Length: 290
Image 1: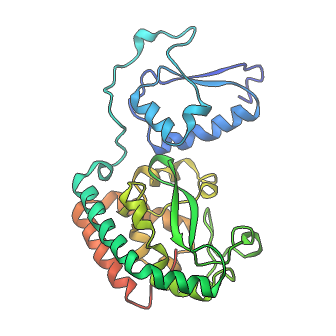
Image 2: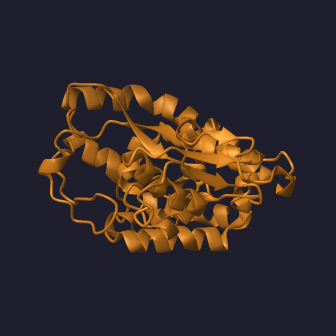
Image 3: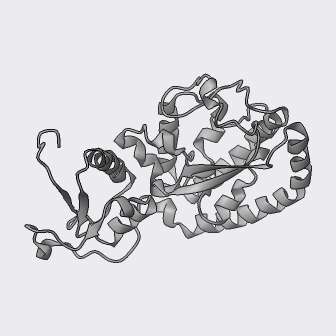
């Protein structure tokens, strides 16, 4: 666009695109933002079912209109694709993995139900305010969802974030002695009890028991295109980062490395091994909040 200042409209030809993954979306979003900033209309031409699904998952179907054809382009050249969802990683369509998620979520929610009255009372007595904390995260293919936790920080923690030094490097935030964390909150994070409500996210399909770390929208805004690959799988309650010292991982490139290692090594048996390792970490002194 900088070399064509007189550009009045941008048409993206998807007629031969059978699949767009999270990395493709990652390269599309900054260009869409640039076009919007310059008030240049952008539209998608002849997008198939897979492309439409990918765009709708992250709400781009509202910002990037999909049209059947465009002047000067030949619709006869379009590729006929089957009406099926995009496959970015085999774990996304694994029936055994999904059944494990459902069974694990039901067990986790049962445990949550038993512990909740005691945890809720402790949270309320330690720090007045809501019991739950809700935050928008990005899941598979960048789809936004509401992640639930038991509140472990003061009520106005988000507003106070700019007052806390970020000890991590790259596109995520971490402070080992974050002053916003309450006394009960430190116990909840050390034992991972604050994450019990996320079994609901697993049950409804926003997350999986095992996967990658779910990022926040502001983290994703800072991603380079290759970083979007970590969104090719559903985020997990646990994963490589959990069993490899999540409280000590302060470099974003290490997070990327662990997430991609999970994608490369994934199998149903691998998920089971990570779950067992997670239980071992939870009952050791090395456990800590992400």
